[in-house]
Image 1: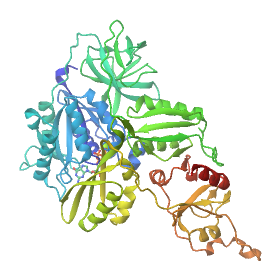
Image 2: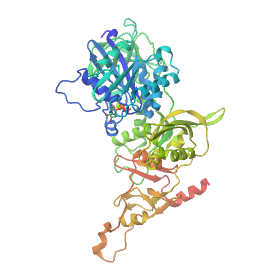
Image 3: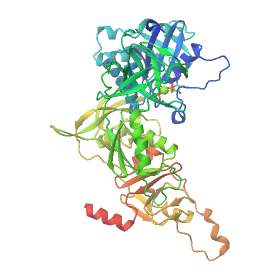
Image 4: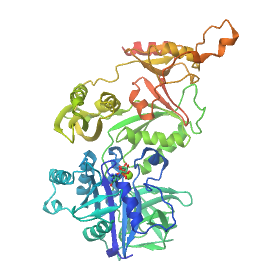
Length: 604
Ligand SMILES: Nc1nc2c(ncn2[C@@H]2O[C@H](COP(=O)(O)OP(=O)(O)OP(=O)(O)O)[C@@H](O)[C@H]2O)c(=O)[nH]1
Ligand SMILES: [Mg+2]
């Protein structure tokens, strides 16, 4: 395809503003599917975790044909923790559609992704989406977008950004709110007219920067990127140049481009095209593929540094190996090393033979990896997430998050109070739609940790919170964390209703009768500050045989079952989360009570 007929764009936005839904509709309206092809909603969210959680985690490529023009589209995740995905794909595109919810307006991640687009010199088209929402306030939101552009230092030309109004859900777009909208025609037109075609000379030697990695069960590891110079041919010999200028000879065994939801094999591809290549088992993000006699790598991709870490540890609980297939240190190491090759914003450090420190951009960034590994059959333990402090000339610094909270106004004071206690500083407070209040804070990342569930309780579920990394600032001293201790199992066995019924008088239980427990396992939250060891397996002394099974005579409140993220937020420094394909258990690091007491005393 001639480069003049190509357009490479990414769809970027804050979480849930409708990116994946927009891509659905672009695919449908460009006639990408056969008439009888059944397609599901948000089809780009193809992995099981994405579908389960309703969010995009990995960026993905697709393309559509509009008349003789080919538009390569990259859908990106909107959640701040996956910001690294957005950063790296900027290298593949010449323009972005910046989606903004017609009611919510620009949100923290809108700012982050637009900043990345400016830094890469990529042209934005603003799409005000969800205009069908009854509470939509299009003009207001458009003003806010303009303010954001100004705030980010946009120049004259950038301030003159094109705007289009859409309902991705209804598949309509229009350039003027007064127009009647029928379909996406105006959006396609706007992309083709406003986004420049890719540059580069087809006569030059090949230069292809790998920006993304995928796997294919037939061809193995696949590198994805844009051809910035020259052309590539199937079966050609080439070299892969890495960041240290090491060169590896390779052969391009298969070459694909993206058509709709499928990869299609092609024999050759020219400058400007986004392609996938296989035949290079060790290909990595940031590598450049070049002609054999012409090493000409592009500078490596820089992405923002991680802000937090968790330890992933070989499982040594008494139940280790019960349901995991991959349990050894070697298994863990291999899997984690593999992850680092494609997850650009993540880092790995081997702390000891059985402990690996994983650095990420937020809890969700790491917990999605944990959840994925669990589904693959891994089991291991995870330590409490820690933020990354920095030692600087001005002293110790810690990561600060910019936090947006929207709550019904009667709860505003309790939010302010809670976040102040967590060393947060309020920067803005404005009335929002109806009786809602929008609050903005700068809070140490440590202080935000675990706050979301408190916010939901405090606001009866009405509070909405978003936060995004803001920068490093002076360490603010101790931040209060969980003020309650744990309820801990005394011995290994099966929890009985009798045992649990007396335990529940001490606090909130996490398990139901019949659950296997072990000594040192955390089975609930104490209502007091210290830990308490309880015998939850004990059975009532029976004088008469008939009554021995009648465990259901005890009234038990339903247990509070913690999700993986909730578990990670709950545990203290001396506790771990044990993750297996079937179970999530909480435990003390030191399982034996007297050893624990001793360890505690030595610390003091
Ligand atoms: N009313 C309305 N809802 C929409 C529209 N577009 C998307 N939605 C809804 O908004 C929600 C989020 O849509 P997604 O397409 O998953 O949003 P996203 O931007 O891809 O989200 P992430 O990838 O997780 O950042 C879904 O429930 C959609 O049905 C729209 O135009 N109007
Ligand atoms: Mg999405």
